[in-house]
Amino acid sequence: MAQFMDVHDGFVGVTAAQLTEAHERDLANEGPEGVHFEKAWLDPESGKVFCLSTGPSKEAVMRVHEASGHPTTQVYEVPVVVS
Image (cartoon, rainbow, N blue to C red):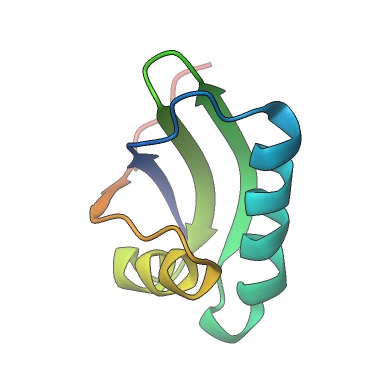
């Protein structure tokens, strides 16, 4: 499975509880697409949310976010990881 990082804009002032709720919607919708959302990060001042997932394609990731109510077109495959 490929790994993806996606970016959402427009989440200024969102709380950790609201991010958790959005992440849980992704988890509820991910199965049919073969996607798994691993983590999400939030910068409430800039309104940016970053999600790390695995799945078959960036289009599958985009479909899950769309179904969850927070679509984005900013999905990037991240094939190189350094620890």
